[in-house]
Length: 312
Image (cartoon, rainbow, N blue to C red; front, side):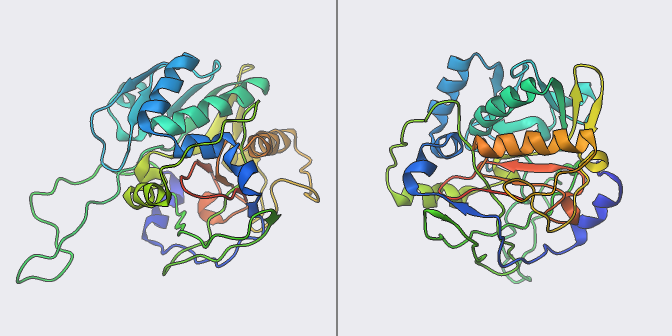
């Protein structure tokens, strides 16, 4: 299930971008005290325990390829109903309603911000999106042949051409840009997040643990990202990223020197994103200011093993 012309973007190569001018790299202590960092790097059982301690209603799922601790949300977060655009009857089985328990913690923090804005419903395009299975070469045949027994993946509800590659670690303590590594990569856009109180420093088992987790999956294939499309206020009024954000590709979204939109709905959408950024709820957020494939949604993600943030 694709949305409009965005379906065609599935066939387009990712747009390569070497730098992003809005990348922030605070000092290590500041990063490690942020909720985004703590949530992204915590173990699965710790995430489940914290969800239960918060009173979040969820259901654990069986194995979901690429997702470390798969769950489905079964209740509202701070009064906010977060769900996909699929009909209600399909939501209990679709993979697009699955998320990692760590993302659910970030969504719970995000919902507290939404509650302050009178939002009671969020419609997203997807959270988890299974990555295509590996395509091993068959002996005597061309590489990349998928065995005929492979089951087809379900259609994607909305393409998200993030195309983000790992980026080189910038020097801490200042805002800077980062170069994308790998071929066809695009500099990852990411920004800050933190909870109401300083989160404890996360004990890490060493760099190898982060490398191992990073190698498994990130973004939607790991259930660590959500594509937010529309938000409904308690008054019944809808805020649409596509219709109301009023973005411009390359423009700054948050921070000093930003040109404020004049439309009330555009202002509120910017305020929601920027409050989440200032609170370091997510590692990074991509908006319509990033590129054309993000013209109709906010890509909001937590990312393990990194010490930078960005909103664009």
